[in-house]
Amino acid sequence: MNDRLPHEKGFHISWDQIHRDSRALAWRLDGLGPDNGGWRAVVAITRGGMAPAMIVSRELDIRVVDTVSVKSYNNQTQAAPRVIKAPQAEVMGDGTGILVVDDLVDTGKTLELVRALYPKAHFATVYAKPQGRPMVDTFITEVSQDTWIFFPWDMALQYVEPYRAT
Image 1 (cartoon, one colour):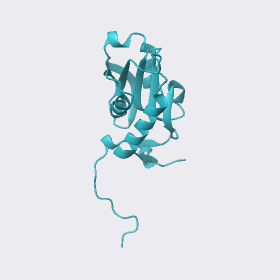
Image 2 (cartoon, one colour):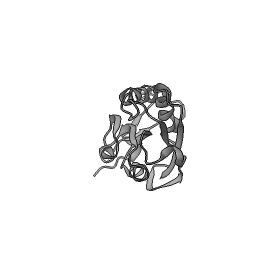
Image 3 (cartoon, rainbow, N blue to C red):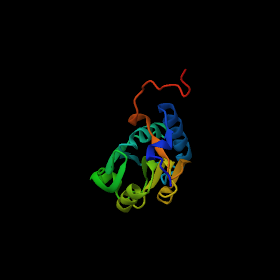
């Protein structure tokens, strides 16, 4: 039996790391769009996808940026996802030429919901867990399903006692 709490197998991501990994995602996506390799727009899945989407849009010089708001977590408890704000319909169409960006795919339920709305969009995440990986077209780093990722926007700086205190 595993008595470990979900956050005890944590992968802490700094602002520098999310920036580097998001740039790597942009480089991987460069030239993959249907418009001579370009993308019509970037859509961030809020809230976690906003920082990576901003970096990707800057790196690939994509000026049209929108959001789709999907609520699927209450703190560290995952619930059924639901769209609470959709992107502009005239931008989205069926998703052709649209790059949908999120920070992480966990179970894949959020991306499954958004993919059903925009089936021809390209889905990219910075991090992927095995269960959700089939829902992603492009990602940078895979982590185990039982890893909890701590993103910098969820953290605060504070003093930590040394491991071996005297």
